[in-house]
Length: 476
Ligand code: ADP
Ligand code: MG
Ligand code: ZN
Image (cartoon, rainbow, N blue to C red; front, side):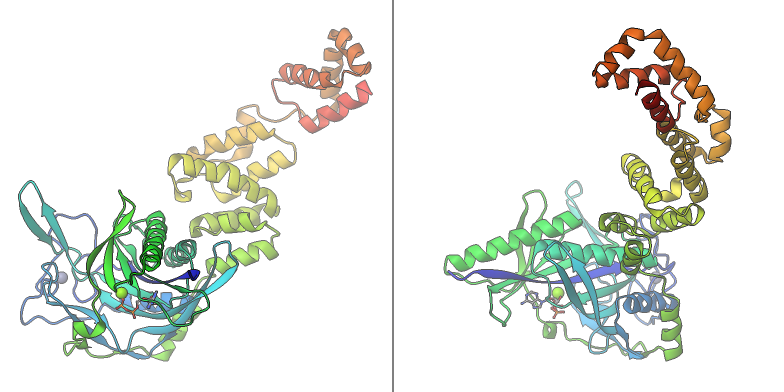
């Protein structure tokens, strides 16, 4: 029995965040009454002509540049012919021989070391409508609101070797499209989705095995599950002396299995040809250069900078670059209080905990980054206790405001005046002579008891560090 390795390539579809569709002025808004965002163009009426949405080209080219693709100055829309009720034109307008962009890469690490996943091409195309099959009505309906919505398809090289790497690559792309804001990344609504091509081959063999194409996975987890199932299924087939059949398979998330849907079509089945209704897209080099110059710092670069320039541990740098708004918030907080590790700790514990628990996003946080930084600084400098700092963050997250004023109004200022603290320590020691004697005789566990008594006397406002120093001196 040979040992097999998995070979995986992904085709990712991302819906571009434009106001209107790719070839008409209809709205792209999700969740509208069926067949309200439609016009003669996107419903395929005879005699209508498509007009390309320039904004879609900009967004698509921005993504292409962000993953290091070469953007073609001249690219061509092609008709991909097939018949389906939700495709009123009878063809999808896509790109074939001359796509928007070619030859990029994304580097991932799913635990087995860094791997560079090549990006074969990125092309533009329009989406189909949606078929709705109703058992209650014993009928099928078609909603064309989505028909004509702009998509990019990002085709990878077959460079991934495990379900985890496929997931990591998909997450990396998702991170980039949302960072750039070219796609909302919503997988449940289908604005970011992928098909996975999976084959296996004996380790050491160069030639690729026969692949199946998996569809219908609407979460990162399901992509990983579907691929893992499919690898095991193909291994079992070969172990039994069978062969993998090239086909399209659907993932059933409830059962965790894939089912054959149809024989996998070949490109020639689609009778691709250049769309005679659309001129070739000419993108001037100056426009490509301008889009490239306008690219923001991307998550991978920022993560590296957080590690090297700010000295953050790798996990913290990764967590703080998972989302652009969160990352920007952190940067603004560090600008206000230049203790990156301390600010990062508070971001990871207090901020992320709060966001995870409530499902809120950093945009819902009314406390400005400068205020957040002020809380961290006040705790660090001993102006308020750790606990008061946490309470302030909890209160100011939704209310916003100035932490210094809040601490004053709520009497949170710590007793850091050593004279006042010494008096409180002396009073507690005087009131507990037996414990003091026991402590001096070696029962050092009593330290906690003294701290507790003094904290009670100062209503929890004693500066813990100072208090410990005074106590140690008095008892020593
Ligand atoms: P199609 O559009 O017909 O699915 P493509 O040639 O565009 O065909 O390939 C789609 C994807 O399949 C690409 O991501 C590619 O890397 C991947 N792929 C091609 N051959 C294999 C294979 N033998 N095993 C795994 N993935 C493959
Ligand atoms: Mg395919
Ligand atoms: Zn329309």
